[in-house]
Image (cartoon, rainbow, N blue to C red; front, side, top):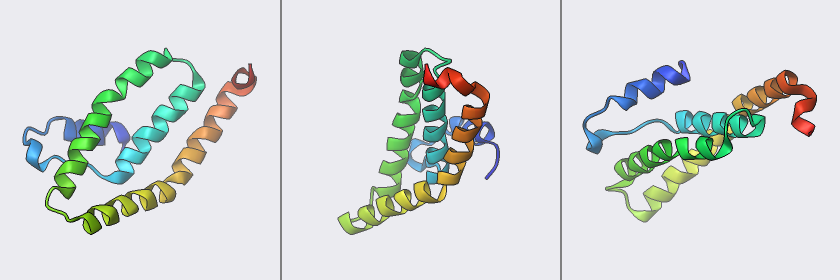
Length: 110
């Protein structure tokens, strides 16, 4: 997996909304990074949550495009695969979380 910023910039320029899609591992890392930023409390939390809205909308579009022609069973399988991706990417969250603890130290426990 490449640089997170680079991957986001690639799909940002997509004009064809019908073909828009980005991977579940990218979605997991986006959410994990927002969770870390929220925890670190260095950015206004209301603005941070508000900045997630375009990511959420793009993920909904991606899901709709991916499952548009799927039956219920296929859509459920897709969602099950998404949960597996989150489980597989958990190491990334743990690494980032531990790094934030080292960086912030006792500030986290105020």
